[in-house]
Image (cartoon, rainbow, N blue to C red):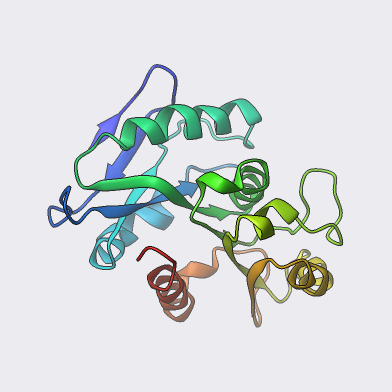
Length: 209
């Protein structure tokens, strides 16, 4: 189904007929990279996600640039509440799935309002929050106990940053899983069926599932 709330952004929602108000599917929100809305990357995965109890929210965009704070607010304060009214969708603590620039925005949103999110899944992102460096953990995510998983190519420029961040972030209490994919650079790592299966297993294990 589609929607375009006045205070939000145009969206597409993939929700299975098996989702009901009694047994709703949780909401997974896609945050696209710069240069493409990434619908061809993630929407073919919607049926598989539904089998695991997830509804997928995407944002079709004709012109795709980097994320702005205003767009992120329109998503979280306009689109997500609109989707929450759909029978069979549980949008109370959505999980954000971001790729590249979308991963950065997911991390910033999680840092700003960790209490409203159920998890963050980052693909080819960086551990830096705005201008902060990787040694400064997002303590709000740790306090709110928000699960965080990151997949990074071993040859991605952000891989060394994640290696440096891992110790301080875990010491700060973050629920962090960090996975390096050998032989890969800055890429859509979920094209690999093994990585995709690992993400599904992570989603299945989240509190509330």
